[in-house]
Length: 268
Figure 1: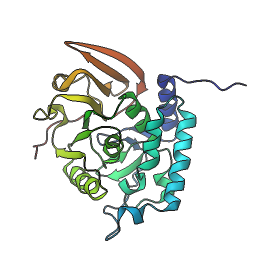
Figure 2 (figure 1 turned 135 degrees about the vertical axis):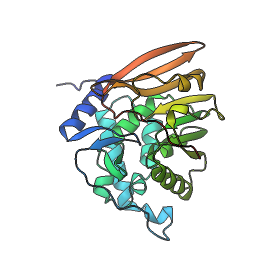
Figure 3 (figure 1 turned 90 degrees about the vertical axis):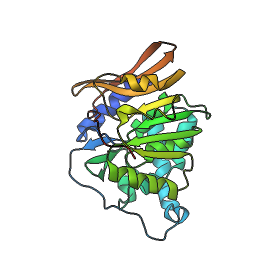
Figure 4 (figure 1 turned 180 degrees about the vertical axis):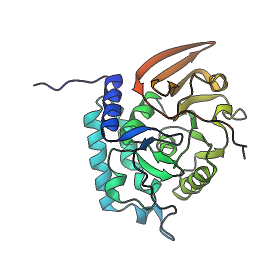
């Protein structure tokens, strides 16, 4: 039988169905899905270790196998996105986690009741932004910093907001230590966006508001792209919006189930 070419919507639906069948319940307000189990990795990183020494041949080989799996299960992804997934050391954003868990195509707990995203979901959402390399990107929901690290290799600048203060602080330190110099982290309310730095060429949400926040639409540049899950708990879509003056064109990418986007932490 000939292989079946999947659209992104179909591929994403299959990813989500697989995640549910594997006991992955939903996407967290950080940067990924929430697994059913309560397991969480220990916090902190290897003291005194350099990024290079922490990313050895076993990790690189495991990452290569993961990227090959993502490419097989999600045809049509931009090769540049796959190359960045092959480059960014996911295990360094999952302190205390073994390579088998770090390079499985699953979400995984990172503490604070949050998780790091399933790599296939990261790939699909990153691809949907259609990054060329000169964009300023706003991410809502920093989590461990992994998604921001991926974006940083494809965009000029990444500005990311995390509402869970300990996660945001850990991500800020981690991203700086690993050399992601074009990422800055704010701890605060994603619904407010980052008006001082607007407009943004791209905006990415990693949790679902009931409807697209007007504040974030205002902060999107003309011609810019916003990718987000939107809707109530059991009736959500992942979509891409392109801004043309006062109008927004919407493209559906598939049905998803993310946790709600939450509000109100003082910014700093």
